Structure formats: structure tokens, C-alpha cells
Length: 165
Image (tube, rainbow, N blue to C red; front, side, top):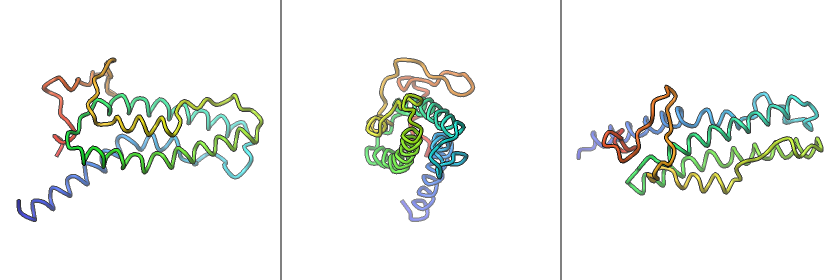
């Protein structure tokens, strides 16, 4: 394979990774950002607590949806699969830990510990991400945003991640 072809292929892979991150993870990361939440105070405002709770619920729902989809995706190339998982872990885990600290600070400062229910621990997320791209069978059908079923990997029309290149 010529050097020009390798460079072009590498650029295509980079573009697909950027598109993947944007389309899949930007909404999830948005839930974990501090914008609109007053983290400089002791969270005395109910708006801040309510906002944190809403963001956590949104994060939980979005992460569950992403996990259901991507655990069924298959990346046969083990190195590429590990790189994708690491890419997600390196971005998601620090953001989630920071968000959990904001929640903890808000709840400790308010004395109201029962308001927000944390569904996923950091370890839960790490375990879930280790299941991404391994082609797990799907027990419940998942639909895409248009309401169409996403085909199961045993369906010959299904394309794996590597087929995108």
C-alpha cells in the first residue's frame, strides 16, 4: 500500500472518530458540564440542585441508550476496539467524577441527601464501556431516533464499525 493511500485512510479514520464523538457523546457530555450550574456557592439555590438532578437523570437516560446500542456493535479488530473504549473512558470518567463532586458538594451543603439518586458509579461506567463494540446479543429491540428498529448483528444487512471505513 502506498504512503498516499495510508495517509488518506488515516485521515478518513480521524474524521470518522470525530463524527462518532460528536454524534454519540456530545449530548452525554453536555449533561456533565458546569454551564448554568453555580458551582462557586454552597448550592443554596434550589435551581442549582434541581438542575443537577435533571442533568443526572438526562445523563443516566442518554448513557443507557448509548450503552444498549454500542454493546451490540461489533469491532472485530481488538486493538481498534480497545482504542475506542479508551477514548471514551479518558473523556467520560473525569467528567463524570467532576460532576459527582458537584453533586456531593451541593447535597452536603444543603443537608438534603435524598434528593438525587446516583444510578451509576464510576466503576459501573467503566464496566459498561468495556462491553462496547463486542457484539453482545440484544435482548430488547432498540429503535433509532426516527423510530426504526436498529438491526441485530446477525442480520446480514448490519454493518460493523470497520465497515464505515
